[in-house]
Length: 96
Image (cartoon, rainbow, N blue to C red):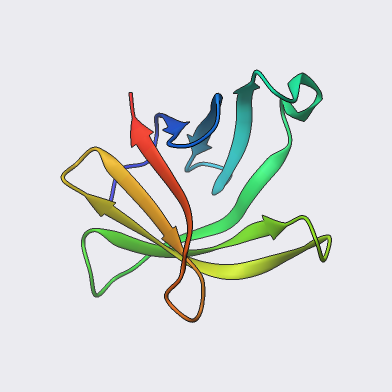
């Protein structure tokens, strides 16, 4: 699963930058919240050995001010969905 690119948020004017060397995704830009640039949103990205198009990670949960476990799924080679432990959609990104 290759995540070394930018991904546009599907619902907000924001872009995340995935860096597999650090196993993190940070805010590249956010038009509604410019101060968010550089913040780590996803950490501890671990590519799954069992599945080519998924990996596990932790995403920042603002309400609890902690990172929570999630699974990332790459679909169609362009769309990245992030789901929580009860399979609810948390985030959707479109690859540029």
